[in-house]
Image (cartoon, rainbow, N blue to C red; front, top):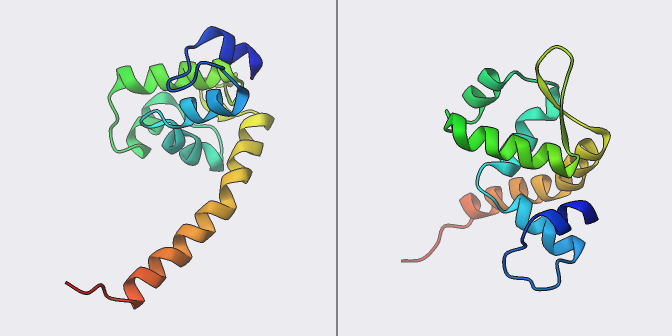
Length: 115
């Protein structure tokens, strides 16, 4: 990850600390969606694009390149993209947030807002 901080400018940070570099990468449009869609296994570029609501091919390739450079995604021998062990660990890190979001959504539906 330190390699990525040195290669890429980190928006909003002059220090380039690892957490800032990670949040910068994950905050880019489609990045988390790509990681999410790869959770079940490798996908070809075409299948990944379809799973990501037809993200533009240019943006998809840019994000895949960034995720590969960061060590989260790899191109498999069969041509599909998949999570590396580090990418799988990143995904696992977001599971508690996913569960929280589901509970939050249910609470929002159960408690109507006042106008």
